Length: 272
Image 1 (spheres, rainbow, N blue to C red):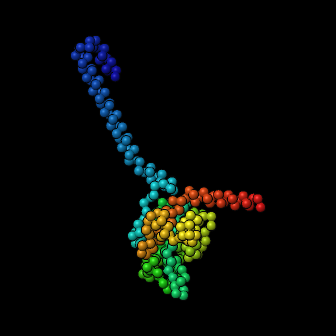
Image 2: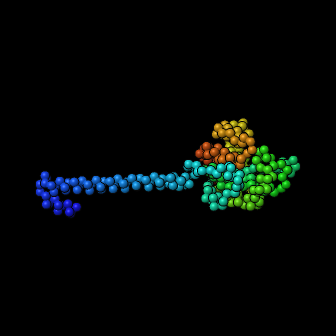
Image 3: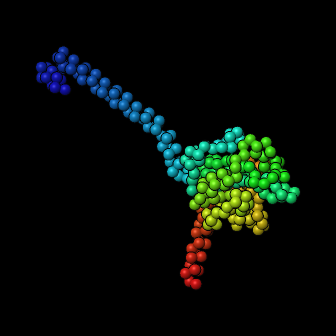
């Protein structure tokens, strides 16, 4: 700039050769500066576009009811039946849905034995899915319903005590969603606090569809979600997700009614 000022003082006439050279030089420098600014702005926009997907993923992890995360496929679950502990820990949410598959033992195979347990997080992602070695001799594998046979258990079965311990640790202090979950906890061999259970078979608006009786999960999915499930052998991951979707559809009203019921109970206790 100082050189330009000196150069300008040397030329007093606008029409002189020096004046024309100066104008050309200034215009060239201005164009160069403008081009650099445009290039820097374009690079900045490109960096922001690259950063945007990671920000979306981060927000989805923070918000339980946000955009669903990718889910594990059933084919991969059938190949492994084991999800790494690090993956389990990183995907646990405060609300979890569970479903179990059971085989039969005892007289005529009528006693339930745990054969598979699946847990999905609030986004529908499978965080736990294991085949279990039944504690008693199996009389009926119920393969047409469970999709499990003797070979499946022999190849993939995990010790009952191990699975029981792992599932109890995952569900501790969590809101557990499921369909007729009493049977699931019966075969798991432990209970869960009643106020932390959301059972789609006992939710009053759902029971009204079955005239006060317990509705089947299949019927609820058809009438409320307009989806068909359990066509053939049951899939415990799919069933857990279905119960989760039913809960999430009615979650605001469901939780509000529970809160009112809880507050009413507290008021009655304080008056007594």
